[in-house]
Image (cartoon, rainbow, N blue to C red; front, side, top):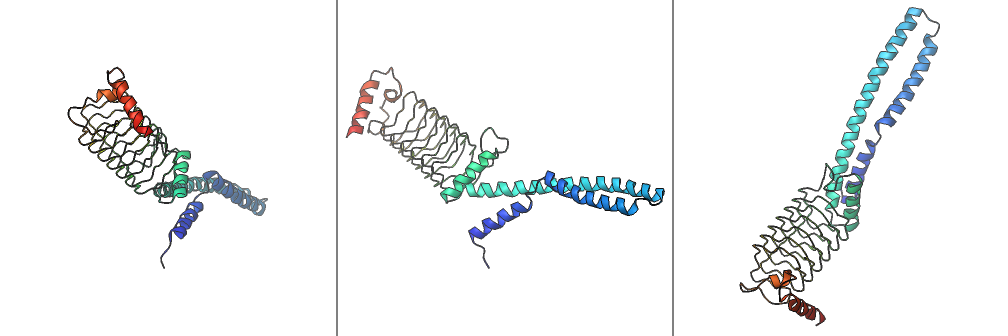
Length: 290
């Protein structure tokens, strides 16, 4: 008979519970049982031939040390298995299409120091998380390098200072997401929805943003060196201080609603000191009032 997802999760939690007893608890229980046996032995052998009594206590000490070492080893093995199963469950649940399940997994990963760039064991690196429902997810400073988040819903997710180097985010929904200071070098953002997203001071060098929707995105001081923005929609995006060196803007819609051509001086969108910067900014603001 097939096991449904609910039953599977229940079985996994039961398996984790079976190995959840820590070493201290195991030693405590074993010591109690050993003490009872010791008292019974002392009662039976008390007053016997001294040679028999001395041999009894020698054997007790030897066996006691052996039992203690065995208990510690078993406890360590159990703890290792518990952590291994817990990690596997959280990795899978973080990519769940169930929003509550995914969010709970992310929070538990953070509590266990298995999520961020500061953690030695960041479990979501190179993880398959396609179509994950991570709306409003607390993923700040998370390490999602080379993870597959294609089609994922990251609406309003907090990804500030996250490491997303080489991350696959094609067709992902990043509506109003916070990506300030994020490392998105080499990321695949083809056709991603970044409308209203905050990418200020993020690094998108070499990223693929072709056909991406960056309408009203905040791109102040963003690094877009060598990025592909072919056919991207940048209408009303803020590009102040952005680095657009070697960017591919072929057929892209610019912040003022016009289409890019080789004759466009992009500094009027990025350089405060450009003579046309203020005029261009006024034009963009007028578009928003229509």
